[in-house]
Length: 51
Image 1: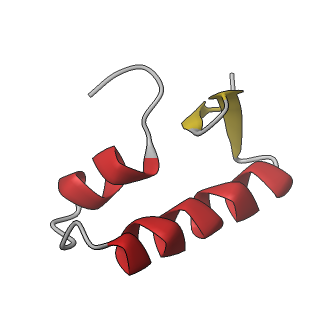
Image 2: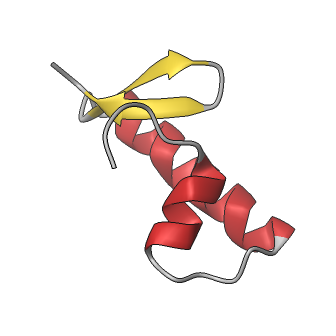
């Protein structure tokens, strides 16, 4: 996949069940990676690698 991904897309890619708790947990981890400067939030809820 290329381009920004949503937390739901990441869960699908790593074969997590699409349950709200899994999606929210993944979203929290993605937000943490944004704070560390590894990812960037392209749009609200859409994450991509930092260029």
